[in-house]
Image (cartoon, rainbow, N blue to C red; front, side):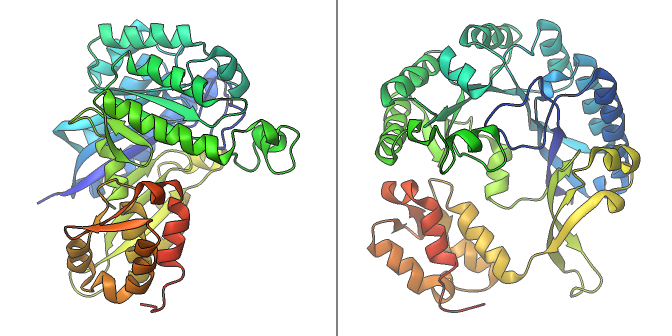
Length: 400
């Protein structure tokens, strides 16, 4: 029986890098993009033997801006993937798209290639905010792209939004959110801005930056989050992960796979993977959890993309304790939380014996709750989720 596998395909190109973005991406010439597509195809082919062990349940083309590729290039990549891997008939296949980079012709190619979900990076419905973020589109261009996708038959669309951006008020955020709600997408991702080191935003809005005071206060940011949940709940969206909301049945299966530690293979420059690798030096029939990523150097990838063992970097075999920690901090991102019995089933240990004292401490503080054998963040805990994870995992009394 084949094991389940998710595929992530990285397209590291964009028209212009946004001021807040720290992803592995940037502008490139048409020639360089074509070189990359060929190298990506070679990497996919190199997994032909491994692919026989798996059945792919989700595919996610991320970036960068995957929609910067021509329709023919996208179909070419998807055709190679379908040649090498066994794809489930009901697989969720997502492409990230920036407004202004999709056309009717591209959308037809996406459909023909088996792509059935589009994730639009809107970020704001306010044109002044879009300019400040360094986005290449206006809200009106987003509307055109969104309507094009609907006309071409896409019935599973996500819209990304960013809150707590400079000079944004709770009122302007609510207006952006309402404009998106009115379009009735199946899924909305509402992220709070993180000012990442090394970005233009960090120089302006990071600690000590001249624009630091233009960021909303913690109280305003918390209110925006609460308002988001209220508005989306009223509109029929289920809050299923810290930053994600969906109509019933439209939760992003690919991302849920990450949070539930399903195996995934990253293809492309810098792409990360998580695999349960069978090894002879593990107990007979046993496996070890391994994480690694591809090289982040473009020239290395273009030259050696067809040799996975050569382009892999940061190969890490996870210890049992690291696996337990991942189970907790990834699983607690989901609003439904984690199952104590699942923890015991996977690791042969009682979560209360391993982390019980710290779990009880955060429960007492009203940050975590136990409900019918599950542990999940409270509303207060969601606000300080990273603190909760640290209190549970890194202050544990007993080392496994």
